[in-house]
Image (tube, rainbow, N blue to C red; front, side, top):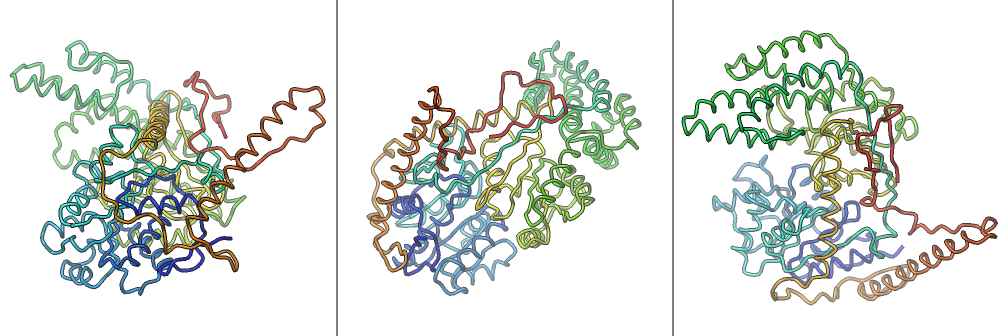
Length: 604
């Protein structure tokens, strides 16, 4: 196996052509690096760090959005970069300000959460003019008032010669969003690597995508009927009054627009505004209750109302009105002792049990939007033999419920990485960057509307070996709309990137360093060669393989149409058999189609 050699890289890093091409782009100037999850954006970052150390920079800063990623980055840098361990330090809010000042002075490589860097720059504790390289991991966060964007702002303002490498798998779903990211980071160019590129194809790991359609059971439908009837009465009244837009599909956005219209009416002393505001408040709560019942399950809906009871005890008047509605009272009485009847939890248990029976040494990641669902799934799955299940949630407090501290998050990730936990049930905090190569299955309890989040979640599997992704979709619910919205946005993102990668970056820019990669060599046995020479050879070799595969495919197509083709073998090449993660499509001709056995799996 050819490996990369550099004075500041430890031996054993596999030489991959596309990573060398990306490194060449990044050391030349500030660059937005877009590369699919699982293809080693971090390896490109190591190469940039090695080049920076060789160039004699005083300080290198890496920002990552979570403390888990900060610790992970430090661990991997110590494994891959030739540097004294005390020169590589983490820099987070768990360190006292006085200690952070010492860390900043002593360390050469600092891995930090962006909030801490921003805050310490603003208070004058640290300055960024001596930072020779800023690496922003999960760079799609760099927008608006997010701390990641603000760190980039302050770096550009304070550094005389800023060099920034911003890495992400999902920069945005529109050209405007991607350009805004580009401009906010003030990078000189964008480097895009796609799974379909010749240089990447040999490293694409098989990933099976399964969309599991489930039909709501009769008990759930019976529970929904009176709630939906009441919701229809309320929304119909709001439509007649002109506060709610006429629509068949009610969304949180439409409810918010109605609330704004009611607020305007109240400001004009229109008495109808007060009645509308009360109705809209109830509609918002009912909409959430219905969504939970349809997409999450009975227990999550029940937990939602129990928390409403807590608000009632705290004196929340609108909550009191909602809970006193007869239809809500009847629902709570009916479900007080009822067992879970939604089909999703049973499918999750079935999938986990089957997977662990076949692959007892592998790990599973499950994502849900709601902490209540996370808790219920942990309880269910711990009943499965050989399943050791725990949760992974954010730090924020929800009412009287505490989140997980940074220390707890790190301990949980380490337990999962070591195999002490083999099933981790996470909220969105677990979506980004988790390096768990043995997580061979990822399960979405529900689809997510964001293309960025969907890509990040899927990227937690098939990083080094084959993996599978399962998405649970409850028919005739919000799940279906979210699934199609996510797919459309993701496809739009790839179309935009395909156009933008062909464009010349706007304006001229100063080249930091001519991208000759002079200090990088490729070693294979006793042979050594310059990195760029290896890159050119890889381009020729892999293009030839692709050309041969196309010819084989065409020959097979021609032979299959001839009378004698039945006796001829079919040729298969790995490059052609691999399906892109982003190519999978579901038959959308009838998104509401019935499912005979409650489970409709579409695979590619």
